[in-house]
Length: 228
Image (cartoon, rainbow, N blue to C red; front, side):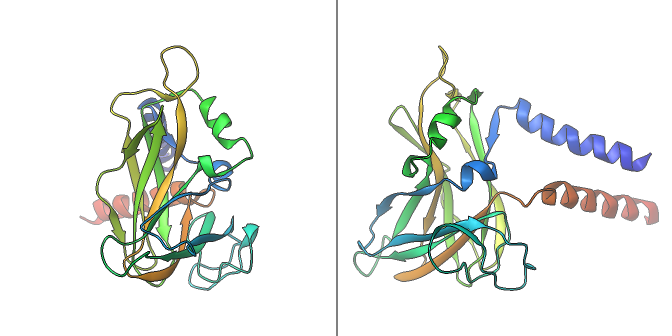
C-alpha cells in the first residue's frame, strides 16, 4: 500500500510540473543540440562530441555512443546525452569564454518539432558537469528575437549536477497557434572558469533515474519517521 501511495505522489509531482506549463527537455531533443554562438572565444573553440551514455558505471570513464563528432567522450557521463568540446578565451582575462548549445544549431528539424509541442511558459533542464574542473551553466531561449536567460550563472564543481529552470515571464512559447509566440532557439550555455579548457557536460536523466531517486528519498524518509 505504501508503495502505491508513494508512486501516486511521484506521478503527482510530475503531473504538477506539466500542468504548470514547464517544458523539461527530453533526450530526443537534446541529442540534436549543437553549438550556436560563442562569446569572448578564440575561433579554435568548438563542440567536438555529442552522443549517448553507453551504460558504463558512473565512476568510470566511458567512450559513449557517439552520434556526432569524433573520438570518445573520455569521462564519466552522469546523464543520458553528453557534449564535449573546447573553450578558449579570445584574450587572457575577464570575461571568460562561453558557448550557446541549442536547437538553432541543428538541421534535423528539431526546432520545428519544438514549435509544434504547444504552449509553455517555462523551461527546465537536468544538467551535469562530468568534467574534472568547475564549469558554469545557465539556460537560454530566444522568442521572436528576444533573448531569455536563467539569471546568474550556476557554478558546478567537478562531477556534480543540478536542475535549472528558465521562466518566459508569462509568455507562451513553442506553439504556433494564435496567441502563442514563436520560439527561435532554446538550449543551455557553458562558460569556462579558466583561460582554456575542455568541457564534458551531460543532460536529461537516464530513463527511470529521477523516479528511482524520488522513490529512494521517499523510502529513506519513511524509515526515518518509523524510528523517530
